[in-house]
Image (spheres, rainbow over the protein chains, first blue to last red):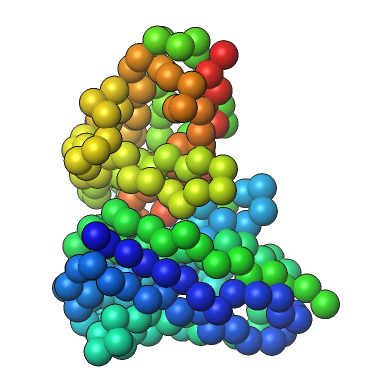
Length: 120
Length: 110
């Protein structure tokens, strides 16, 4: 059974950094791309980033480019989202989600999400 | 600001058919597969349709998807109270080199 568990969320001050983790199980992790998608309070889903199955390609939304870095450790079945220079508008539930393929499709399975609140 | 446009709301009585649209462009829906997700309050998004019109196992055949040109649609037949949720379309955008989601449609069962 495919399982994704996010962690690392919390309350952080504007301008500070936070690293989210996504631990995966139940499938061959190194064969799938992983996305991060967020939902701000009262808003819709917003795609954030994707990393290919082997880490060779990474793509970011314009709204986070230069501030957020996605990475993965296939030996630990884990994907990370390093978020720097956080802003109030980054406040959201962050979901990690498995790509339907190696990173060039859309998500098929999602985690439960972790809440990030950027506030002074 | 999403590049995929959905109607903000749709509604129907139990048993009715509801259809919602997802409008894009030649850089996203045109050349790529469309996916649909159901979002219930407090729950993770659930995949309903993949590759335009394919249903994952476990998704009732009341849900169906289609795509034509730069637009896609999701239809719910035999509407049930548990279908009351937010629905999002998604695809890849070749110009943005990134994923994109629709603005979302809230379905209400009257």
